[in-house]
Figure (tube, rainbow, N blue to C red):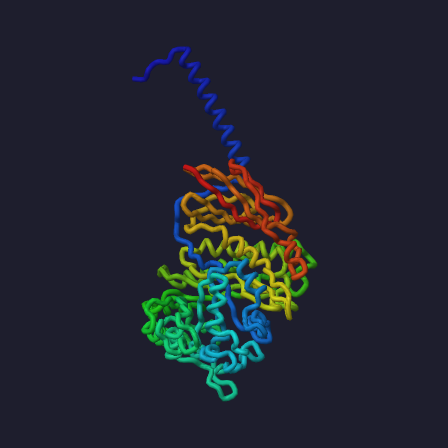
Length: 512
């Protein structure tokens, strides 16, 4: 039986109830007002993030864009110090050598005494390659910039007849040649390497089989590529069972490649070179991006969706199979005088911030990724631009974002469950340190955020951010003045503001 209330108890109950209702109403009103700025993070670790999400891709591009040759000082027989310095600043975790170039690259032409190395015709990119940069020089570069090397092998030319022969020289490489390359690099007792003056190994753990094999109807078909993958894998693993092998899995090949050759390889590769512009009403082509900054911004801010569709297409094609993926090439491909002129703008840097955030969201399966070609003298798709015949190499906008994210990221991904209007945010953590990668997609206004963390509080927070005029363009004349990383201390209450058109990495020390 319920206890009967006295008049005093009844009045007290009404007052308490009214106060509770008022407080609840106030809380709800506050929550509604703050809904647009709520940044909520679930600190539960979801999956390990690979250290290779910021890989760079180096390919000798001949007369098209003097990349590797321009990086080498042929008088001093060394890498150009300014290229080394710029790459050390970028700090890529992995460096890939190869591309279409490897369809006709014979690795033995790039080892031994430099004076005896033959030149080779660059059948894809035009001109002659001196072969002054080969296996040992590539490993030396990786050591100087502290990058893990990833080597692409000549996969029987990917079956492309146009690369089979040049001036009487056979240009395809077979499985035995690939195995010999592994032995040259990794076998401590390899006589060939030791005869060239390298007593210690030039170790390479990661090797890619086939480059864009499915992109040429005149090359290997899927069945042929799978058979070659098994053949090459067996030969190479016989020399060194510990190597990590990456097979080709693009264009819907992933499921069958894994089904038939999965026991022999560790990852599947796919590439993405894309143009987010409209064919009917382009705003990025050539110098059009300068004419309508607002339309340029809107197009670039939505470009990440194309990137996302490509990754999801590859994932979905595996039909639930747990297979690590390697996006060993990825960048914009927009027509222009110097190939993608708009890529020198900070607006593209912000766009790449969104793309790199998307790579992190797929980090449960995406274990190697990039967002640029590595270096060159002309193409704007490069991460590092090399002035010629001399000068100071500098980082493009995409590289500045990769540098920022690379230095401020955790080991485990955590989930962002609520995101403020106008912001694109991913999160990760290492122990009691939380990392946020924040892109303000608003071109001309700041965005507010109020961080909410269940079960933890902020001990300290620091933002490292790049904010600039979206239409400013980097060059060797202003590279030290624009798109610079600024550091600022954030308040411990988690109420922060991110500048317009900015990319930020936030480090947060947690308690609790």
